[in-house]
Image 1 (cartoon, rainbow, N blue to C red):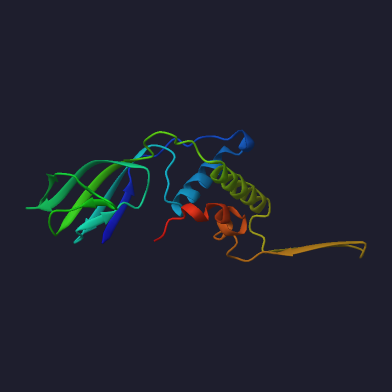
Image 2: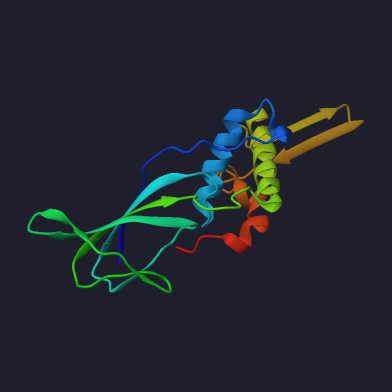
Length: 176
């Protein structure tokens, strides 16, 4: 059972020209999208603590295992790394700490569909910021022109879905 997962270093996210002037939203979008998918496109370190499993399926890719340690006698003790088809195999019971590098290897360019998902999400969030705090809006110009909209209170939380970004990311969605 996975007890904890900590991404230990803050990555440097790539920038897309289509999002010039929206860097703050772009970083927040990358962080939100990464919480939704199982791929990492920027290098960083991660630490997993697992308990009472014989085999651990690595939840994020691409990865490179740095170390495996077993909790024994009130301290972490280095263990040999045993790779398995799903990730790692442990030699005994108890708690293990796995340290790995994510976002390593060749061909780590952000795929076009992920880039488009980020752009959709940023544009949606930018539009939502223009109307921050509003849940409904209506204007009537003597009956000649009328405009109105209503937004759910959960719209910000569902921005990945409502922007259409989640549809583009469905093939690399992280199952939890």
